[in-house]
Amino acid sequence: MKKITIAFALFVCSFAAIAQTMPAIIPQPETYTLQTGSWELNAQSRIEATGKEAFRVAELLAAQLRPVTGYGLPLANGLTKTIKTNLIALELNSKEDAALGKEGYSLQVNNKGVFIKANQPAGLFYGVQTLLQLFPKEIAGKSLVKKASWSLPALSISDKPRFGWRGLMLDVSRHFFTKAEVKEFIDNMVKYKYNLLHWHLTDDQGWRIEIKSLPKLTTVGAWRVDKTGTWGTFSRPEPNEPKTYGGFYTQEDIKEIVQYAADRFVNILPEVDVPGHSSAAIESYPQLANFPENTRVNSGEKLMNWLGGGKFTAIYDNSLNPAGEFTYEFLDKVFTEVAALFPFEYIHMGGDECAKNFWEQSDAVKQLMQKENLKDMHEVQSYFVKRVSKIISAKGKKMIGWDEILEGGLAPNAAVMSWRGVKGGLEAIKLGHEVVMSPNTNAYIDFMQGDASIEPPVYSSLRLKTAYEMEPVPPGADPKLVKGGQANLWTEQVYNTRHMQYMVWPRAFAIAECLWSPKEKRNWNNFVSRTESHFDRFDEAQIKYAPSMYDAIVKPVYDTTSKVLKVDLSTEVEGLDIYYSWDNSFPDRYYPRYTQTLVAPKDASTLKIITYRGKQEIGRMMVIPVADLQKRGAKK
Image 1 (cartoon, rainbow, N blue to C red):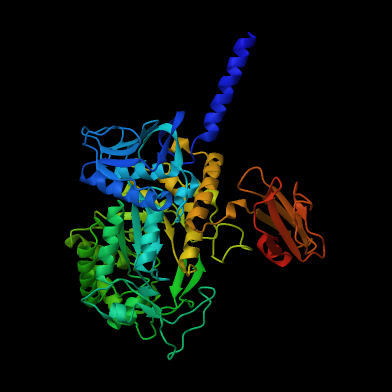
Image 2 (cartoon, rainbow, N blue to C red):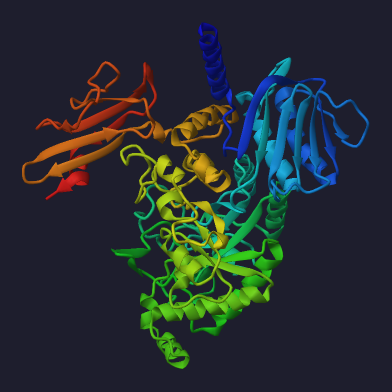
């Protein structure tokens, strides 16, 4: 009996060891088994690939490994009769493995080497991304690391994505990002198996794509007065202020980026946002608007009056005239050139946040309504959307738009990108249309990701845990009509690539896992552990990320009658302690630890908070004026 007990204890311990040493892979693979042993990459190792497409993936792998390891890693044709040891082998299946699909892969690490197989080159590429995550964190760096060998654990993985559309949106209109920065964005997204870049190329603040038949779009529409500070609060530009901020991508730039993305199995979805969000186009070609007199490329000054309840008006006319034939001639030229530049089957026409107040004042729009028997402004926008859909269809492309394109009636064959929660997506599905889920409730990564006291100001918040709870197929939806989902980075408050990285990561880890991994495998605490490992990899790669998941969540309640302020504190991550002070000093782990609801001292002016994991300070110092807490928690 004692021998059985000891054997069982040894089994439990060995199982625990396996569980603890499973590599931190994001997104989590469909199935995996950790095995006994390891394999060492060393100076004698080589890479073999069978076939031209597999060889191209092998070249990308070698380009990643050589600078850091210093090894030659020669490439060879996998058909040659060499000894199959001490190698990384990439091979396309001669007979399709139905379990893997188009983007899946199998990966085996044993004492002979690494063996990746897939039905398609994309699958090999995603297998390589997983392989790179099996290496020690230093492999993510940019400098030579002198090691005799790099150890990989023996394991077996079989993996494929849950959804085919796994997107990240980058807004380059509000702030311009260079060709090199866009390529870097692509490099980072593919590490986590994203396969679509939604490129938001036009908006009120800049037109970023060269249209050769409409040159003013970039000579005029790509430039604005340079402003720095808090977006939406800037002073109105003076007529003589120089327009020095901006930029655009030439058609040669576009072709280069499209090819760069394609080499990494990324499609690019171009967005030309109409009929609203069109100030840059209207300043370039004033005949596009009903009332263009005061319209200009917006520099971050207030543009809209937000009235609440989803209602808003434009301060100056930033919407295309739906009653003007010049509008459709203009769009035909734009989409002709866009369609020729982007191989992807879809073009995004925007369609969101179109203010109707200038349409309502327009005699031309009133005449259009009478002529076409349009009952309201929603039907006017639907008329516009349907005409745009015909233009895009004539270029051999499919149209997709934000969920506002549902208003007044949806164009046939259009797909919907649901951003105002999932409601628009569900409505489109009931009408039989395909949808992409990018709800602002879970996938808007321009929102603050922690407390407002410590994050750059944005009008809403999205915690990492909430991003991880995204479900692309909501209750009642036909899963066959859900193409997938994406996270959206709007860049009003994103001035540079370092802050862009801060906003994207780690929330893009969460969305990647929601779109790739089986739903039933999702586990928040396990995800947190893996995310922390990837923070270490990002430190090596010199990529910025947000540590907001370690910061306290603050929930104040202020009774305006009794003048009593109460504050509840919590954390997203388990196992953290919260320490605080009301006396203006900076708390550490020797200060009072939060155990129950705090009641603010009568004359306190500031609450300061810090989090620890054991003896290690892990969160950021949060400093919140009591007046702010009272305002946040006001309860009459």
